[in-house]
Image (cartoon, one colour):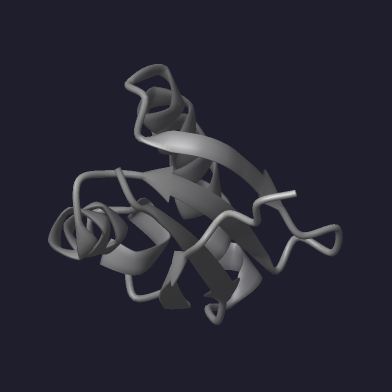
Length: 88
């Protein structure tokens, strides 16, 4: 399956972001348990997230992204890129 790197940058006001970010963390845990996320984490200054998605295709990656709490609430911008793992 292809891998996709998803970068989410928080753009909303902190008072609105807090609840959605908590939902986001729970959603990421669920996706990880379901095998859809290989790796995920938050940026050190709490202004976004980075995930490596392990999904069937770009359509699935975009659908998953659009359903994330911060994105659904319009509190974040995002960028999705297909990623080629380096061969060492």
